[in-house]
Image (cartoon, rainbow over all chains, first blue to last red):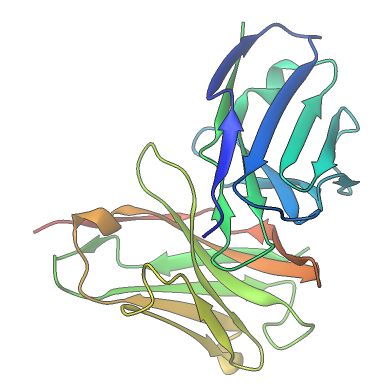
Length: 107
Length: 122
């Protein structure tokens, strides 16, 4: 199965900062990479599809980039409500797999 | 707006069968080419894809669970279900149902239920 490794595991950031989370795939997956946000005691929320395509209703400060094996989720001008754990997910091959998650703490 | 709602037994004895249902509102299990999906999350851990089913009835399961999992559709009730046999404590998790959509580059999960916790314990 394809293994996704996110970095960092945890990051403490201040509001208005720019945040970058990376996701590395164990093999080439093209653009078959998606991002989700999970707040405490909530279900995941869909953020970005196919590495860089935006989702209706998601704030424009969230953006994605990358292809092949290396991908990035960027949050511009972080807001307090962005405190959450972020997961990447690959759909290139079954079984579908997720990264281990990156927890963002807002200082 | 599509909504998904999980229900089922919150406590299952070891070696027994876990049974959950996902009720769909604001959409139909029979429309479109969506994959109706189960995903779980053990306490304090990440997400694990269990499997999904298309309206055709075709199913895809995670190989790590394949021998114990069955996902089925009930068109008359507009819902789909999960059965996981021979459960152990390792199956304790929050179970989510979700809708899968996508193109040839693969399936993403755009709508999720709120999740239902399941504990395996005697």
